[in-house]
Amino acid sequence: MGLSHTGTFAQSRTSTPSALTTAGGPPVKAKKRSSVLSKVPLPTAASSVSSLVTDSTGKLAAPSMNELTSETMPDLGLKVKQLKKRKDEFKEALREAKKKRMARTEYEGIPIVRITNKFGSGDRTVVEEFYVLKQYQKPAAYLRDFYWFDQKGNRVTNAVPRDREQAEIQIMHGPYKRFDNGNLTDEGYYYVGAKDGRWEKYDRNFMLVDKVRWHRGFPAEARITYYDSAHTRVKEVIPVEFGKIKGTYMAFHENGRLAEEGRYDNGVKVGRWTEYYPNTTRQFRRKLTQHARDQWDTGFEPYVISEWDEKGKMTYERPKENTVVEEADDN
Image 1 (spheres, one colour):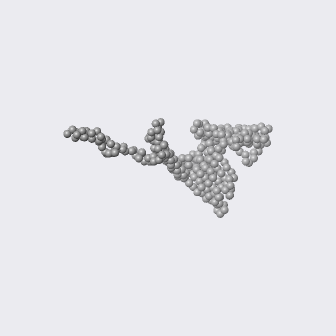
Image 2 (spheres, helix red, strand yellow):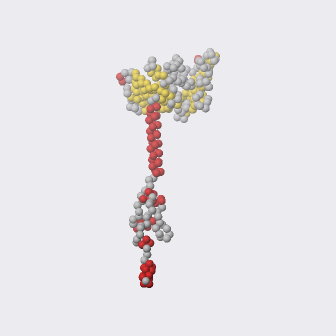
Image 3 (cartoon, one colour):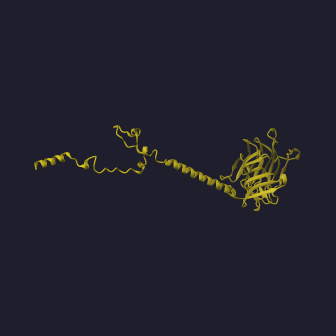
């Protein structure tokens, strides 16, 4: 009995339950890695192990999140930029397409109608492609003249019509092109009867021979002042060419009627200058003044040729023998 008890006791001291050993018993379950970590390849060589040793004790440390995602996570910022760029390009294409469609039906927001006019024959055939207002709109009062399509005469003209405001007048508005015997010779734009933008003239070899820029009836370089802040009522137009005051000068009354007109040559008044009354029904001249023929005639003293009252009756006339005869091309 004693030996048996001793043997059993000895066995209990030398044997270890299998569940507590590292060689036996059920394996310890590893925690499931996240979806991101599962895609990261495990380090497999000494070079990989060296990159994981980051602490001061020399123990292996887990890689940081930046290291894990630097090669596996997509660059969402770059994709967002690319997507935004594609959207911007698409919007721009839509705008251009809309602009081209609208160019056929309106110009500067005003509805237009396309007309093709042809006259002449053989080598003298002329074709004009242009647009007119779909609905009549009164041209600006400050325009000396305006361009319109004369259906009876089959031509584009700036001749003064019998009734400036008659609704059947087809006012020029939009792009204009002229072809002589199939060759483009003239092109430009109109704005409610006035020349606008860049106008160009070509020879038969399509070589540019003339170029002028306009702003709604006036040379683009002209200095224009207005009565109102909305720039609808012109007060004065000072002509400027290549930085010098040269060309036709115009001043207007507040009601839009022409007040004064004449020419400048390099800042000097030349030729005949005319002043007008602000009548609204029929405009009468007030005074006609003679200036030098050109800028070089510095000794010339300007003088009054004629004067009229508001009803058009002449009140003064200078003797003709003392009056300078103007050349045909002078205004």
